[in-house]
Image (tube, rainbow, N blue to C red; front, top):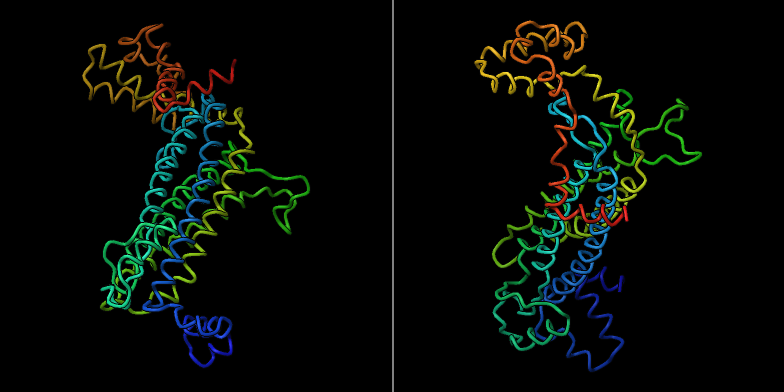
Length: 381
Protein backbone atom coordinates (compact mmCIF):
# COMPACT_ATOMS: atom_id res chain seq x y z
CA UNK A 1 0.00 0.00 0.00
CA UNK A 2 2.82 2.41 0.79
CA UNK A 3 4.24 1.93 -2.71
CA UNK A 4 0.83 2.85 -4.14
CA UNK A 5 0.61 5.84 -1.81
CA UNK A 6 3.94 7.15 -3.05
CA UNK A 7 2.35 7.33 -6.49
CA UNK A 8 -1.24 8.40 -5.68
CA UNK A 9 -0.44 10.64 -2.69
CA UNK A 10 -3.98 9.82 -1.55
CA UNK A 11 -4.52 7.41 1.30
CA UNK A 12 -7.98 6.19 0.28
CA UNK A 13 -7.20 5.56 -3.40
CA UNK A 14 -4.01 3.74 -2.38
CA UNK A 15 -6.01 1.63 0.08
CA UNK A 16 -8.69 0.82 -2.49
CA UNK A 17 -6.12 -0.13 -5.13
CA UNK A 18 -4.34 -2.47 -2.74
CA UNK A 19 -7.60 -4.17 -1.74
CA UNK A 20 -8.80 -4.45 -5.35
CA UNK A 21 -5.58 -6.20 -6.34
CA UNK A 22 -6.34 -8.92 -3.82
CA UNK A 23 -10.01 -9.59 -4.51
CA UNK A 24 -10.02 -9.58 -8.30
CA UNK A 25 -12.92 -8.59 -10.60
CA UNK A 26 -15.36 -8.18 -7.71
CA UNK A 27 -13.27 -5.22 -6.68
CA UNK A 28 -15.17 -3.10 -9.18
CA UNK A 29 -18.02 -2.91 -6.68
CA UNK A 30 -15.77 -1.65 -3.90
CA UNK A 31 -16.44 2.00 -2.98
CA UNK A 32 -18.89 2.29 -5.87
CA UNK A 33 -20.56 5.70 -5.89
CA UNK A 34 -18.85 6.71 -2.65
CA UNK A 35 -16.47 9.51 -1.82
CA UNK A 36 -13.56 9.15 0.60
CA UNK A 37 -15.34 10.91 3.45
CA UNK A 38 -18.30 8.53 3.21
CA UNK A 39 -15.94 5.87 4.45
CA UNK A 40 -13.56 7.91 6.61
CA UNK A 41 -16.08 10.06 8.47
CA UNK A 42 -18.47 7.20 9.13
CA UNK A 43 -15.63 5.02 10.43
CA UNK A 44 -14.30 7.91 12.48
CA UNK A 45 -17.72 8.34 14.09
CA UNK A 46 -17.56 4.74 15.26
CA UNK A 47 -14.12 5.32 16.76
CA UNK A 48 -15.14 8.53 18.51
CA UNK A 49 -18.31 6.97 19.93
CA UNK A 50 -16.34 4.03 21.29
CA UNK A 51 -13.72 6.36 22.77
CA UNK A 52 -16.48 8.48 24.30
CA UNK A 53 -18.03 5.42 25.94
CA UNK A 54 -14.68 4.52 27.50
CA UNK A 55 -14.31 8.07 28.78
CA UNK A 56 -17.79 7.89 30.30
CA UNK A 57 -16.72 4.81 32.24
CA UNK A 58 -13.61 6.59 33.56
CA UNK A 59 -15.68 9.63 34.49
CA UNK A 60 -18.21 7.46 36.33
CA UNK A 61 -15.39 5.89 38.34
CA UNK A 62 -14.10 9.32 39.32
CA UNK A 63 -17.60 10.34 40.44
CA UNK A 64 -17.99 7.17 42.51
CA UNK A 65 -14.63 7.74 44.20
CA UNK A 66 -15.56 11.33 45.03
CA UNK A 67 -18.86 10.16 46.51
CA UNK A 68 -17.12 7.79 48.92
CA UNK A 69 -14.61 10.38 50.05
CA UNK A 70 -17.21 13.12 50.34
CA UNK A 71 -19.20 10.97 52.74
CA UNK A 72 -16.08 9.97 54.68
CA UNK A 73 -15.08 13.63 55.24
CA UNK A 74 -18.56 15.16 55.46
CA UNK A 75 -17.92 16.55 58.95
CA UNK A 76 -14.20 17.30 58.67
CA UNK A 77 -13.95 21.03 59.34
CA UNK A 78 -11.56 23.09 57.27
CA UNK A 79 -11.22 26.73 56.39
CA UNK A 80 -13.07 28.05 53.36
CA UNK A 81 -11.00 30.58 51.46
CA UNK A 82 -11.89 33.34 49.04
CA UNK A 83 -9.15 35.25 47.21
CA UNK A 84 -6.77 32.87 49.00
CA UNK A 85 -7.73 34.44 52.34
CA UNK A 86 -9.63 32.83 55.22
CA UNK A 87 -13.36 33.33 54.74
CA UNK A 88 -15.57 31.04 56.87
CA UNK A 89 -15.35 27.41 57.98
CA UNK A 90 -16.75 24.62 55.82
CA UNK A 91 -16.07 20.89 55.58
CA UNK A 92 -13.75 19.00 53.30
CA UNK A 93 -16.57 16.63 52.43
CA UNK A 94 -18.61 19.57 51.16
CA UNK A 95 -15.74 20.55 48.85
CA UNK A 96 -15.61 16.99 47.47
CA UNK A 97 -19.39 16.93 47.07
CA UNK A 98 -19.12 20.10 45.00
CA UNK A 99 -16.57 18.40 42.75
CA UNK A 100 -18.79 15.33 42.45
CA UNK A 101 -21.74 17.41 41.30
CA UNK A 102 -19.58 19.18 38.72
CA UNK A 103 -18.37 15.88 37.27
CA UNK A 104 -21.96 14.62 37.12
CA UNK A 105 -22.79 17.59 34.92
CA UNK A 106 -19.73 16.85 32.81
CA UNK A 107 -20.88 13.25 32.40
CA UNK A 108 -24.23 14.47 31.10
CA UNK A 109 -22.44 16.76 28.66
CA UNK A 110 -20.17 13.97 27.48
CA UNK A 111 -23.13 11.68 26.85
CA UNK A 112 -24.81 14.41 24.83
CA UNK A 113 -21.62 15.03 22.83
CA UNK A 114 -21.28 11.31 22.10
CA UNK A 115 -24.81 11.25 20.74
CA UNK A 116 -24.01 14.26 18.58
CA UNK A 117 -21.23 12.34 16.81
CA UNK A 118 -23.14 9.06 16.60
CA UNK A 119 -23.92 9.71 12.92
CA UNK A 120 -22.76 8.41 9.57
CA UNK A 121 -23.02 9.70 6.01
CA UNK A 122 -22.85 7.93 2.65
CA UNK A 123 -24.19 10.61 0.38
CA UNK A 124 -21.53 11.05 -2.28
CA UNK A 125 -19.26 13.86 -3.33
CA UNK A 126 -21.37 16.83 -2.23
CA UNK A 127 -24.18 15.20 -0.26
CA UNK A 128 -26.77 14.92 -3.05
CA UNK A 129 -26.85 11.07 -3.19
CA UNK A 130 -26.48 11.46 -6.95
CA UNK A 131 -24.25 8.35 -7.17
CA UNK A 132 -25.49 6.38 -4.18
CA UNK A 133 -29.13 6.37 -3.04
CA UNK A 134 -30.29 7.29 0.48
CA UNK A 135 -31.50 3.71 1.02
CA UNK A 136 -27.88 2.52 1.06
CA UNK A 137 -26.97 5.15 3.62
CA UNK A 138 -29.93 4.16 5.79
CA UNK A 139 -29.06 0.47 5.66
CA UNK A 140 -25.35 0.90 6.34
CA UNK A 141 -25.85 3.28 9.26
CA UNK A 142 -28.46 1.01 10.77
CA UNK A 143 -26.07 -1.94 10.64
CA UNK A 144 -23.33 0.15 12.23
CA UNK A 145 -25.58 1.45 15.01
CA UNK A 146 -25.34 5.04 13.81
CA UNK A 147 -27.95 7.65 13.03
CA UNK A 148 -27.98 9.08 9.51
CA UNK A 149 -26.78 12.67 9.21
CA UNK A 150 -30.07 14.20 7.93
CA UNK A 151 -28.27 16.55 5.55
CA UNK A 152 -24.60 16.41 4.62
CA UNK A 153 -22.20 17.69 2.03
CA UNK A 154 -18.94 15.82 1.44
CA UNK A 155 -18.33 15.44 5.18
CA UNK A 156 -20.06 15.06 8.50
CA UNK A 157 -20.27 18.62 9.76
CA UNK A 158 -17.45 19.62 12.06
CA UNK A 159 -19.65 21.42 14.57
CA UNK A 160 -20.34 17.87 15.81
CA UNK A 161 -16.63 17.22 16.24
CA UNK A 162 -16.14 20.60 17.91
CA UNK A 163 -18.95 19.77 20.35
CA UNK A 164 -17.17 16.54 21.25
CA UNK A 165 -13.66 17.98 21.64
CA UNK A 166 -14.78 21.10 23.52
CA UNK A 167 -16.67 18.82 25.88
CA UNK A 168 -13.46 16.88 26.50
CA UNK A 169 -11.76 20.20 27.18
CA UNK A 170 -14.51 21.18 29.61
CA UNK A 171 -14.10 17.92 31.54
CA UNK A 172 -10.35 18.52 31.60
CA UNK A 173 -10.94 22.08 32.87
CA UNK A 174 -12.84 20.69 35.86
CA UNK A 175 -10.05 18.22 36.58
CA UNK A 176 -7.55 21.07 36.35
CA UNK A 177 -9.64 23.07 38.82
CA UNK A 178 -9.68 20.20 41.31
CA UNK A 179 -5.99 19.43 40.82
CA UNK A 180 -5.08 23.09 41.33
CA UNK A 181 -6.92 23.08 44.66
CA UNK A 182 -5.15 19.90 45.75
CA UNK A 183 -1.82 21.46 44.82
CA UNK A 184 -2.65 24.59 46.79
CA UNK A 185 -3.70 22.67 49.89
CA UNK A 186 -0.49 20.61 49.71
CA UNK A 187 1.68 23.71 50.05
CA UNK A 188 3.94 23.51 53.09
CA UNK A 189 2.28 26.55 54.67
CA UNK A 190 -1.13 24.84 54.55
CA UNK A 191 -0.29 21.10 54.40
CA UNK A 192 -3.94 20.03 54.60
CA UNK A 193 -3.74 17.50 51.77
CA UNK A 194 -1.13 15.33 50.11
CA UNK A 195 -1.47 13.34 46.94
CA UNK A 196 -0.27 9.70 47.14
CA UNK A 197 3.48 9.33 47.56
CA UNK A 198 4.82 5.79 47.37
CA UNK A 199 7.58 4.04 49.29
CA UNK A 200 10.86 4.75 47.55
CA UNK A 201 9.41 7.54 45.43
CA UNK A 202 11.54 10.68 45.08
CA UNK A 203 10.46 14.24 44.57
CA UNK A 204 13.73 15.88 43.60
CA UNK A 205 17.16 14.89 42.34
CA UNK A 206 18.78 17.41 44.69
CA UNK A 207 16.44 17.74 47.70
CA UNK A 208 15.63 14.41 49.36
CA UNK A 209 12.90 15.91 51.54
CA UNK A 210 10.62 16.87 48.65
CA UNK A 211 7.12 15.43 48.25
CA UNK A 212 5.71 17.34 45.31
CA UNK A 213 2.15 17.24 43.94
CA UNK A 214 3.45 16.01 40.60
CA UNK A 215 0.34 13.97 39.76
CA UNK A 216 -1.92 16.99 40.18
CA UNK A 217 0.55 19.08 38.19
CA UNK A 218 0.43 16.49 35.41
CA UNK A 219 -3.35 16.87 35.26
CA UNK A 220 -3.02 20.64 34.93
CA UNK A 221 -0.45 20.37 32.16
CA UNK A 222 -2.45 17.94 30.02
CA UNK A 223 -5.68 19.88 30.58
CA UNK A 224 -3.97 22.78 28.82
CA UNK A 225 -3.11 20.50 25.91
CA UNK A 226 -6.72 19.36 25.52
CA UNK A 227 -7.94 22.96 25.78
CA UNK A 228 -5.62 23.87 22.91
CA UNK A 229 -7.01 21.01 20.82
CA UNK A 230 -10.53 22.35 21.40
CA UNK A 231 -9.53 25.61 19.72
CA UNK A 232 -8.31 23.63 16.70
CA UNK A 233 -11.61 21.71 16.61
CA UNK A 234 -13.51 24.99 16.56
CA UNK A 235 -11.35 26.29 13.74
CA UNK A 236 -12.08 23.11 11.77
CA UNK A 237 -15.78 24.00 11.60
CA UNK A 238 -15.27 26.51 8.80
CA UNK A 239 -14.38 24.72 5.53
CA UNK A 240 -14.57 25.98 1.96
CA UNK A 241 -17.75 25.16 0.06
CA UNK A 242 -18.81 21.56 0.53
CA UNK A 243 -15.45 20.61 1.99
CA UNK A 244 -11.71 21.20 1.89
CA UNK A 245 -8.97 19.16 3.54
CA UNK A 246 -7.59 21.71 6.00
CA UNK A 247 -9.25 19.90 8.90
CA UNK A 248 -7.92 16.44 8.12
CA UNK A 249 -4.28 16.73 9.19
CA UNK A 250 -5.20 18.45 12.45
CA UNK A 251 -7.88 15.88 13.32
CA UNK A 252 -5.39 13.05 13.02
CA UNK A 253 -3.67 14.60 16.03
CA UNK A 254 -6.37 16.30 18.10
CA UNK A 255 -8.99 13.54 18.11
CA UNK A 256 -6.88 10.62 19.37
CA UNK A 257 -4.65 12.79 21.54
CA UNK A 258 -7.56 14.54 23.26
CA UNK A 259 -9.25 11.25 24.06
CA UNK A 260 -6.04 9.60 25.28
CA UNK A 261 -5.01 12.60 27.38
CA UNK A 262 -8.41 12.91 29.05
CA UNK A 263 -8.56 9.19 29.77
CA UNK A 264 -5.12 9.44 31.35
CA UNK A 265 -5.82 12.42 33.60
CA UNK A 266 -9.17 10.96 34.64
CA UNK A 267 -7.39 7.84 35.87
CA UNK A 268 -4.77 9.96 37.66
CA UNK A 269 -7.45 12.06 39.34
CA UNK A 270 -9.36 8.98 40.53
CA UNK A 271 -6.15 7.57 42.00
CA UNK A 272 -5.36 10.83 43.79
CA UNK A 273 -8.82 11.09 45.35
CA UNK A 274 -8.88 7.43 46.35
CA UNK A 275 -5.51 7.55 48.13
CA UNK A 276 -5.54 11.19 49.20
CA UNK A 277 -3.84 11.94 52.50
CA UNK A 278 -6.13 14.21 54.50
CA UNK A 279 -4.49 16.00 57.42
CA UNK A 280 -7.55 16.90 59.49
CA UNK A 281 -5.44 18.04 62.45
CA UNK A 282 -3.67 20.54 60.25
CA UNK A 283 -7.01 21.71 58.88
CA UNK A 284 -8.09 22.52 62.43
CA UNK A 285 -4.83 24.33 63.18
CA UNK A 286 -5.35 26.45 60.08
CA UNK A 287 -8.94 27.22 61.08
CA UNK A 288 -7.71 28.51 64.43
CA UNK A 289 -4.76 30.35 62.92
CA UNK A 290 -6.93 33.37 62.11
CA UNK A 291 -7.59 33.78 65.85
CA UNK A 292 -11.37 33.89 65.57
CA UNK A 293 -11.56 36.46 62.78
CA UNK A 294 -13.94 34.17 60.89
CA UNK A 295 -16.65 35.12 63.38
CA UNK A 296 -16.62 38.77 62.32
CA UNK A 297 -19.72 38.59 60.14
CA UNK A 298 -21.66 36.69 62.76
CA UNK A 299 -20.81 39.27 65.43
CA UNK A 300 -21.79 42.06 63.02
CA UNK A 301 -25.19 40.47 62.35
CA UNK A 302 -25.76 39.86 66.07
CA UNK A 303 -25.06 43.50 66.92
CA UNK A 304 -27.48 44.66 64.25
CA UNK A 305 -30.06 42.15 65.47
CA UNK A 306 -29.74 43.62 68.96
CA UNK A 307 -30.62 47.06 67.60
CA UNK A 308 -27.26 48.64 66.86
CA UNK A 309 -27.02 50.64 63.62
CA UNK A 310 -25.23 48.64 60.93
CA UNK A 311 -22.57 51.28 60.27
CA UNK A 312 -21.78 51.53 63.98
CA UNK A 313 -21.71 47.75 64.36
CA UNK A 314 -19.37 47.46 61.37
CA UNK A 315 -16.94 49.92 62.98
CA UNK A 316 -16.94 48.01 66.27
CA UNK A 317 -16.21 44.71 64.56
CA UNK A 318 -13.70 46.10 62.09
CA UNK A 319 -11.56 47.96 64.64
CA UNK A 320 -11.14 44.75 66.64
CA UNK A 321 -10.56 42.69 63.49
CA UNK A 322 -7.86 45.08 62.26
CA UNK A 323 -6.14 44.98 65.63
CA UNK A 324 -6.18 41.19 65.47
CA UNK A 325 -4.65 41.32 61.97
CA UNK A 326 -2.00 43.90 62.87
CA UNK A 327 -0.91 42.68 66.29
CA UNK A 328 -1.75 38.97 66.25
CA UNK A 329 -4.24 39.24 69.11
CA UNK A 330 -7.21 36.90 69.41
CA UNK A 331 -10.31 38.51 67.91
CA UNK A 332 -12.58 36.85 70.48
CA UNK A 333 -10.57 38.18 73.40
CA UNK A 334 -10.57 41.66 71.93
CA UNK A 335 -14.37 41.60 71.68
CA UNK A 336 -14.68 40.30 75.22
CA UNK A 337 -12.74 43.34 76.44
CA UNK A 338 -14.46 45.85 74.17
CA UNK A 339 -16.92 47.83 76.29
CA UNK A 340 -19.14 48.82 73.38
CA UNK A 341 -19.38 45.27 72.09
CA UNK A 342 -20.05 43.92 75.59
CA UNK A 343 -22.76 46.50 76.15
CA UNK A 344 -24.74 45.07 73.23
CA UNK A 345 -23.66 41.44 73.56
CA UNK A 346 -23.01 40.67 77.23
CA UNK A 347 -21.83 37.30 78.55
CA UNK A 348 -23.35 34.24 76.89
CA UNK A 349 -24.79 36.38 74.10
CA UNK A 350 -21.23 36.91 72.91
CA UNK A 351 -19.91 33.41 73.61
CA UNK A 352 -22.56 31.58 71.62
CA UNK A 353 -21.38 33.42 68.54
CA UNK A 354 -18.00 31.66 68.66
CA UNK A 355 -19.29 28.24 67.65
CA UNK A 356 -17.77 26.69 64.52
CA UNK A 357 -20.73 24.33 64.28
CA UNK A 358 -22.86 27.29 63.23
CA UNK A 359 -21.16 27.31 59.84
CA UNK A 360 -21.59 23.63 59.11
CA UNK A 361 -25.06 22.98 60.53
CA UNK A 362 -26.67 22.64 57.09
CA UNK A 363 -24.08 20.34 55.53
CA UNK A 364 -26.36 17.34 56.11
CA UNK A 365 -29.14 19.12 54.26
CA UNK A 366 -26.87 19.62 51.27
CA UNK A 367 -25.86 15.95 51.31
CA UNK A 368 -29.52 14.94 51.46
CA UNK A 369 -30.29 17.24 48.54
CA UNK A 370 -27.70 15.51 46.32
CA UNK A 371 -28.54 12.01 47.53
CA UNK A 372 -25.32 11.31 49.44
CA UNK A 373 -26.52 11.19 53.03
CA UNK A 374 -28.13 7.73 52.66
CA UNK A 375 -24.67 6.44 51.70
CA UNK A 376 -23.33 7.65 55.03
CA UNK A 377 -26.16 6.02 56.95
CA UNK A 378 -25.56 2.76 55.12
CA UNK A 379 -21.84 2.95 55.91
CA UNK A 380 -22.56 3.39 59.62
CA UNK A 381 -24.86 0.36 59.65
